[in-house]
Image 1 (cartoon, rainbow, N blue to C red):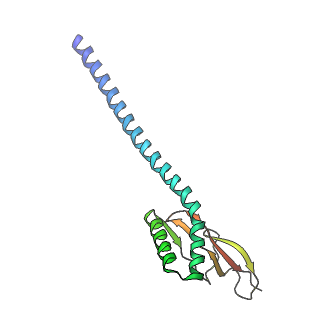
Image 2 (image 1 turned 180 degrees about the horizontal axis):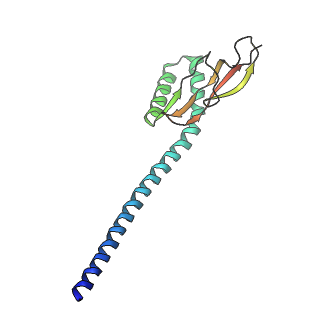
Length: 143
């Protein structure tokens, strides 16, 4: 009888140990996920603060055509790409899409309504994911 009690106690203790190990493993995984999410959020805040600087550099390069500014722009964009952030590609004549565009002005110019007539500043998104900064555009409102 004592053997059966000891066997039962051992089985209960083993079951408790297995549950405790599973709980610990789940906790470890959750903490790792939360750490990754925190790092991503911290990086996102920094990126959001730096994107206006990138816009200014692009405008400066358009006027100066300076090799140093060009190199800085390229390195800046490569760093963003390495972090999984890509520029949203938009050109004149594209149709306005509120998911990725921010209309800063609508212009009556006789062109098709809802077409982009000028890109004012770049937009950025996580590769295949959500938009970080919408592309600022001027849009035709037709006649």
